[in-house]
Length: 319
Length: 319
Image (tube, rainbow over all chains, first blue to last red):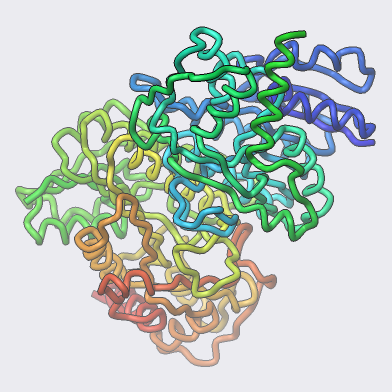
């Protein structure tokens, strides 16, 4: 039994992680500012005597520092989760929430003498990689989005704290991670398609040309991989892709959603262009070889993951 | 003739760069907060009608934005230059001066519609690389110092601005860069040894075990390489090592300095340990193959560079 702190623990991944860590017999504190986290994600945990929820921001350093006292390991999942930049958005959102936020987490850990950090990084650090599926050793890294850049900056900061202050880190570069928890903010393609098809059963608008391709992984697999890595990857700084290794295109995702809803003859409209949004990477897939060498493999490939998530989201709505 | 802005242009490298850019026939503005820059570095340029010096901080965004107006290209050399972290130092110096500073430079460029940036990065982004000499494609990058981490964060930010806002960048990962300009702050091994040997001709204290090895390059070569790269590297984000490709140990540097001063039988004392300071990389060398493929090679290897810099520093003192 250990004391776990999860920043951003009311998010889609963080809340499932909290649930899993409680199941294994840990004490878990979730620290979340509820900007994208949701109360319903953690309401099932509130009665657990080993669980505590504290509403707070990682940018509130003093509070973070106090909440962290006595933790054995910090899962730092809090971040601005929205990779999409729209004309007119401020350009420092990722810098503040992700980079400065991560610095605060590291400093609070250092002051509290906590030495183990697990961090949610992203496939977006690779940018338009020339090797696909992309292994962890790929370089030089040229992120194409402010979000991807901020996550790479966080990786760098975490690495320096490991060497300077004796930390150990597990940095997971996540594939697109999907699950049954509906994301109302609509930043994710499956949710987006379901919403659009509910509004209009005859037509579906796809951002870009539909050929964008990415790795998709179920949240269950993601959490399973994270916990496996912590026990089996023993470097000072462990940088690991979490991915099924393959990828799926937006067109294929659209086809799956349409099938799962049970629609026919849906007309597909494309906004056009190779990118779904400014900074989007047209084709990416994360190599899963390094995790496989450690002995772990995702149970579901990208297509199976998308179908399972779609089924679960649609099923959840009918309950 | 183009308009060049050099942030940190009163530093050792920035001021030599300014001089060279003026020689080629450009208009040059140096913007420097004089925290580590020095008036004597640029006093020879002040009479040049194509030169302007403006004292200001890159953290002063409004001033930076105004100064930048009309520039064609920004050489962003301003940074906290001191890689050494001492117990009790604040941990956010690099984050503020390097990462936030670079963000300000990028934002000021975006607002002023300036699209070309040249950036001084560092060998420290590689950390304790397993491949030496280390090529640009090496990964995953695990910087061991707050300084190295901040520079990698800057690289990531710059890359995202290239893809998001149509910038083009030349990111140079510098070897240890040395020249005739004495650095009073004493952050550099040659200056440090000369100073120590002046105080005591019979004994020299070396930080670490003397076996630390790094690539050293003359500032002349560095600037030559930077300008060559701008004209010959045509990617959107060009990440290039600037290095002679080989390396030299601290013991060998001590030997050269002792020879050049003309001393004999100097007793060497070691503080011990593999690292010269917390976050130091015991052995690093930057591959120069990528620049060589483009057609450029440093004129001096590491040993020749150290000897030339030592001669020049010692000579300069006798004038």
